Amino acid sequence: MGLGRGGNVHGTPDVESGLPVDFKSILMQTPVKEKGSSERKEDIQRKRESDSIKRAIKEYYRTTKLLENYAIINYTGFFKIIKKFNKNFLSNKGKFKEAFEKVVCCEGQEAEALGDRMEMLFAKWFCGRNVLDARVQILPKRGDTLEMDWTQLRLGFHLGMCAILALWVCWDCIWGLVRDGKSSIGARTAFPVFRACGGLLLIHWFWGFSVVMWSRYRINYIFLFDFDPRTVRTPIMIFDDAVSETLVYLVLMLLYYKAGAHDIPEIFAVTPGIFPFILVLYTLKKLLFPWRMRAPLWRSIRDVVSTPLTSPIFFHSFVADWFTSMVKVFQDMLWATCFVLSGDFLLSEDEDQTRHAWEHRFWYKNVVIPLICLAPLWFRFNQSLRRYVDTGKRWPNLANAFKYALSQTVTLFGAFHPLYLYYQDKPSRKESGFGVDLFQVLWMGLFVSSSLYSYFWDVYMDWGLGRPKMKFLGPRLMYPKRMHYYGVIFIDLFLRFMWVMTLVPPQSGASFVLPSYLTVITMSLELLRRTLWGLFRLENEHRHSTDNYRKVDFVPLHFSTGHAHQYKQKDSVGWSVLGEVTLVNLGVILVMVVSVVAAQRAAHQNDVV
Image (tube, rainbow, N blue to C red; front, side, top):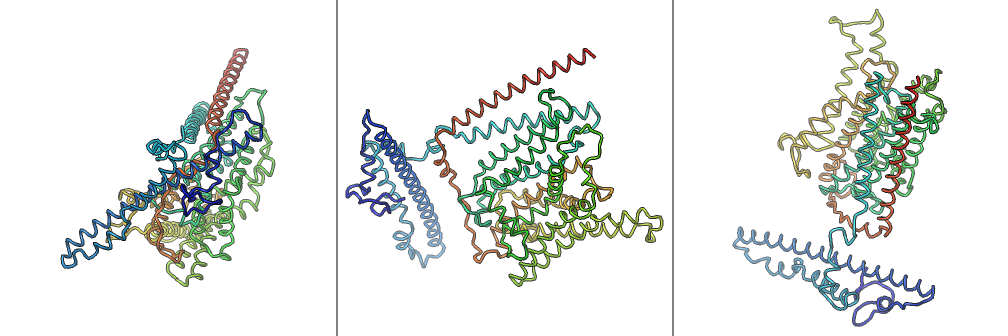
């Protein structure tokens, strides 16, 4: 917004100040003590417009100071370059002197003059021509003139609540294991629902961590992903949402445990399955709303699923790669869907009856589950073929397609009752001369080959590392410590083998399949591996544009001021946070009272018995 003589604003500009007459009249209005309601509304409107002009001048002034600093940095850089040039090439000494003094940034003099003009205008309109007072008000301050960063206070408050709830849940799980000798939550019937929603929640946390790392080291993920900057959320906003979702998740998990253990007073007692049902509804709401923020992701998922009918962009391939790591999450999401639609969440867990009959049906076990295991690999396989059609380059597109085809083969071996297990149970199985089952050797060979091939592709192609001439790293690294690269290369080797294990469907009969309550560990480790992969994948794409998704190889560095969005905060945000703190404290007191009453009643019943 320009406010000087060249400003693009409505109204006739004043000759002296360069400000339009209608803006100047707003600033010169003085309120009268006693006025009618209409006049008071006009005064309020003028005050708002005056504050808006104030903020515009402050933002304009701060922008000129950033421009001045940028000009001075460039001037200093060119000065050192020319000084070095004159020192090394004495015959051409002074050749660039005139161009340097007149052309290069002018030492930031124009930006400095523009900033001085903003100071004079602000002093004249708002500070009684006191330039020093104007500078105090107009200069950037820590927190951008906000009295308190309520967003960070709310985030810290929610993090503390999450920590307490997490300890509470872990304590109940451990105490139930010690007291009863069995898992208290992991073996419960609705645990896959919490595992599915927990996987999605973990992805949300990992996405916030990735955004922090990309922003910190100037990796322009907004440009690489073709995001709309207007809908991109800052890291603190992402973490604030994730913490709120974690609170709901832990509360519902705790209530589910208490309801199943009959620790809730009878007056509040409900069927335990109600709490997983509420969690499913809450997760759906978060996945769909606000639609303005979620719509781009769902459109990208639509394009990924419709491959190869649509030409993939870099973000589509990134999403499809994430899908290959979410196989266990998708399986649990299917289980949660059947759990809700079948009405099993309404049944009591103490009833001795056959439940989850759909879990043993042919369509579920032999059709849908294998399709879920194969679909992400199939999407990525088709994207590689489509890239080959679009670019005409066999390398690396066909080699990448072969990688996913090999992974699909491993999945097929583990899907329809693994062949090596079938022949292992037969007394007439064919064995080699060394007594080794040929089918088991074949499957293990595919397993190891697929894992090593995928590992090589991660390090050498996706990350651009593993170059012997560069100490097995790559050129122009953007992360500061080399040990981080070596550490991730080492960790990825082991986690890749665990990823292939996730492709084996549950209930396949394989002897190496983990119990249901331990699969959350392999699922979490795979999501962690994919997050680390994404950090270095974007770094390599930023440096080299490896897959030629853009016509121009240059990628600008990512810069974020981090304060522009704060001007849109409502004045009542502090009161809302304080109100939330008060309500939570009252809720905690209520829970404590109910817990004490329940404990006393239980002790009384034990004494009577």
